[in-house]
Amino acid sequence: MSSTASGRNGTWRNWGGNVAARPAREVTPASVDELSAAVRRAAEDGLRVKAVGTGHSFTSIAATDGVLIRPQLLTGIRGIDRDAMTVTVEAGTPLKRLNLALAREGLSLTNMGDIMEQTVSGAISTGTHGTGRESASIAAQIKGLELVTADGSVLTCSEKENPDVFAAARIGLGALGIVTAITFAVEPVFLLSAREEPMPFEKVLAAFDELWAENEHFEFYWFPHTGNTNTKRNNRSAGPEKPVPQLQGWFEDEFLSNGVFQVAQWVGRAVPAAIPAIAQVSSKALSARTYTDIPYKVFTSPRRVRFMEMEYAVPREAVVETLRELKAMVDRSGVRVSFPVEVRTAPADDITLSTASGRDSAYIAVHMVKGTPYQRYFTAAERIFTAHEGRPHWGKVHTRDAEYLAQVYPRFEEFTRLRDRLDPDRLFQNDYLRRVLGA
Image 1 (tube, rainbow, N blue to C red):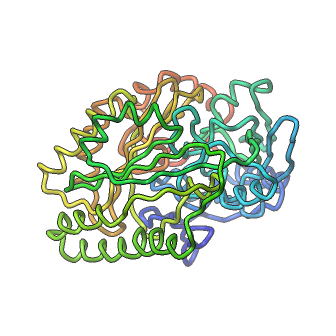
Image 2 (cartoon, rainbow, N blue to C red):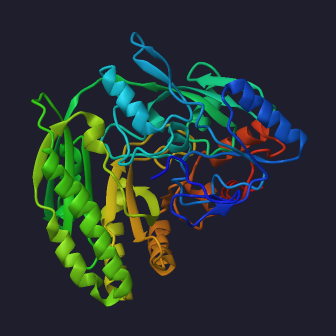
């Protein structure tokens, strides 16, 4: 996958291929000063401004017909503070590069999502997360932020400096300014032991609270049209390192998880009626395995099959009931779903518009392979999620607006007031922000 999602003749496209935009101009600043100048110039020209990373969002959160800022020259580590155990990194740095650089320094983030193609600023601005009992999203690991605001000035914030901005801008949706650098908490690199094993759907639901409580990082994938899941438990380990052997890793992660899966998707698209039978086979293709490695090699995996995704955070105590309703809907509706449903958790955090803001959360993600009609499945799933006061992932398909979001986010107004102060003329506005935050 190319590092930026883009297209021909000035049209920008996202990774999922469902969003396109034609900006008036693109700017690739090589410094924060150049970025500030680009923001000021856009305001003078009456153009709106959006920064875009790798286009991994399925919403039009980064789309603009104004000035598109590409941050790929704003990359690399600015500094490591071993006393404070923090690293400050430029906003355009891909997570993959950050993880590799930290590992070389004997350091690691505490938790991360399952893909690392995104830029750090794109990942935090949309609330990217992994799964964890105590450790939360990537944004919850931020200790400081630098952003260029609507008047072109550079604002730094932390718990001590501009704390109201810090509370909101860690997941700022691109609405408060353009993030230029992020300071993350890091820790000495550690080992994780992963245990992956199939488990019946009913058994996982019955034991969900135990599985959550007994593991630092628990997640599972349910294969629709089957009673089968694949579970994954990641826990810290004293070692020794025991990575997945290269050939076995290629076979399981590339051939089975991406190759055979891609073929299954092609067959499913050609013959939708075959999907339940294919699901039975693919849900049994992956056998149990355990391995021990450094965090990013355990948390992340390659995703070669392109898809569309909707994900909602529901209160953790509602997850079992929500999943039962989702399964009943799939069984009843006749929709053919060839992609597993992913279930993860996060503890409550203190970020204004975090999907886990103020409540322990469970995430349920539904996917459809790119190019298949997903609306019917997603609409039915969304109806179930919203009945449980679900909060949609900011970077994934959803139909919610400011009126709904104000009801499920107790601090919603705090965010919009801050936005009024930092961007009164809505320089960073676009259609998506108008919908989710109000005009």
